[in-house]
Each structure stands twice: as C-alpha cells, then as structure tokens.
Amino acid sequence: MQTAIADVATTSVIASKQRITNDVKFLAANVHARRSRMAEGERLDGLCRLKNLSDLFNTIFPDSQLKGVLDFQRLLVRELIDELSGFRAYMPTSGVELLDWMMVRFQVENLKVLMRACLTKTPLKEIEIHLISLPRELALDNQRLATAESLKDFVRLLPRGILRENLTKALETYHNYPRPFFFEAVLDRFYFQRLLEKIKRLCGADQGTVRPMFCQEVDIFHLMLVARGKFHYNLTPDMLQPLHVAGTLIPYTFFTTMLNSPDLYTSASRVAKRVLISLFEHGPSSGSMIIDVSDLEGYAWSHFLRLANMAFRQNNMGLGAIMGYICLRRVEVANLIAISEGIRTGMTAETILRSLIPRTNVEEVFV
Image 1: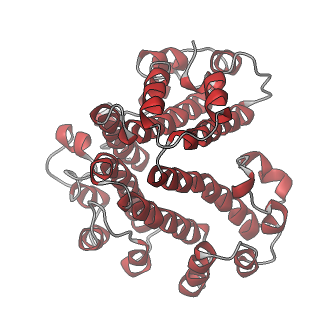
Image 2: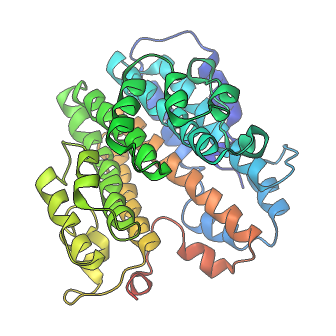
C-alpha cells in the first residue's frame, strides 16, 4: 500500500521547480491526488492488523532500511517537513507566511526536548533520537542548549527575538515552579498566538475556511491545560490563566470557569458544543463522571479532523484545500506513530484502532 507519505517523487518535483507566483490551483489539484493515497479508514484498519514492525516499515517506506521504531517515527516527520517545504513555491505570500510559521512548530517541539534535557541534566546522546531533523533556517544549537547549566542560561542561548522574550517573562512568572509543564506551555502559547495572527492576514474567504480548524487546535491546548494542569498537577487557576490564548471558541471567561469547575467532567461539558461536539452528542448528558484524559484529547482531535476535512472539501481548489490537507497529513502521521507504538508494545489490532483519530469508542471515555 502506498500512502501520501511515500510520495517522495512528487514532493521532490514540486520542490525543484522555480517559484510560481500564486499557483494555488496547481497545488490544490496535486494535494487532492495525494489525499487519495493517505492512510485513512480501511487502510488504517489494515495497518493495525500487521503482525510486526518490519511489515509496517516495509508497507509505508518500501525502500528504506529502518533500524527501529524511533527511526520510523523520525522519518515520518522528516517526510512531512520535506513535503510542506515544497509547497512554498505555489502559495500566495499570506499562505507562505502561515506555512512558514506552521514549520516553526517542529522547532518548538525540539525546544521542548532540549529544555527537558537541560532541566533533568540528561546527556544529549540520550535525547538526540527524539529530536527532529530541521531545515537549516530552523536548526538550533542542540549541544549548547542541552548542556546549559540552568534554564536561565538555556533562554540566553536562544536566538534574539520574541521567543526568547516570552521565555524570559515565563522565568519571572514561574521561577518558583521549575517544571517542564509551565515552560512547554509557554512555548505552545507563543506559537499559537502568532499562528492566529498569521491567519488574520489571509483574505476573508481563506480565513473563514481555515480559521475553525486552527482555533480548534488552540482550544485543545486550552482543554489540556485544564485537564492536566488543574486536575492532574493540581495547579491553581491563577497559575494557569496567564497561559490562555485569545481569539478562539474558548474565551478567557470560559477558560476561567473551566479552571474553577469542581471536576473534569463538569469542566469539559462547559465546552461540549465548542470543542467536544461528537463526544457529548453521544456520551452521558448529566451527572458528574470520571473522564479518561487521553480519550478526551482524542475526541477533541477528532473534531479537528472533521474541521480539516471540511476545509479540504469547501475550498477544494484554493488555500483552504491545501491547509486542510496539511492538517489531515498531521493526523495521518500521528496515527501512524500510534500504530507503530501499538505494534511495538504488543497491543491487539482492536486496541490500536480504538486509540486512533477519529475516536468512536465513546463508552470508554467515561469511567
């Protein structure tokens, strides 16, 4: 089976062409062809039923010589980065600006790994396998960052700019709580704030198509701040409120109300019609219940997937289709990584399938 991930030849052709000003229709037609080869639906079911990792590796990357599951996962992400980099030549300026910022997400994930290494004094050799290979313009000084003496030194080693300024302010706010949770959340907040700013620069039609799915992604961040920050780490609302990102379906007042709810079920149900539509359409409608956090997150991402599909279909020859496809690819990569972990740990095919996006096992979310 060939997925969009294995479509390296097409990707390299796009990347090798000279920049074509605003040839969105060409790229939109191209991503429609790629979509037909993605690992979705029955293809995902088939992958979940593979007996070993070698079969999975050979199915997705037939010509590769992968040594293990981490190599497989890194290659998935590397192919995604290469594919998105090739899209720049065919997008309008506003689309390129948005796409370039979406690429910063990979840099943010590397920063999280390096920050944890700094805080835990973990040698670089032990965490290198978890770092994403980035284009030169996004590359970091991994050695110096991982071996920084303190988080303050870590921040000083970052390139000058808004990112370093945000982390410097976070050090002032959370200096008494040197947990990775806070500083990773600050990185996410910074990324999402700028993401929404980039979306505002799109034309009205494009903005209306792509904004809902990206707002959903930001609101998943809000939901997990509540679920993990408040109800897992027992952090107080005043510690979490500064991490809110304005401009989504969970405004500051809603976020504060969620943080002050007595339990996670009550908190999540407050945004049922905004972020968790499919879950609360079929789940319990009353009473306080315990919710599995990972499944709660999975259902939020399922709504993200639905919105990405809508963007892909509604603006099928424009920027919406391209951005929708990019988000669909991100979900595909996440699912393939989940499958590789499931096979590695010996899960049954049914268990692996239930852990993928979209989620359909509503009855297992409520304990």
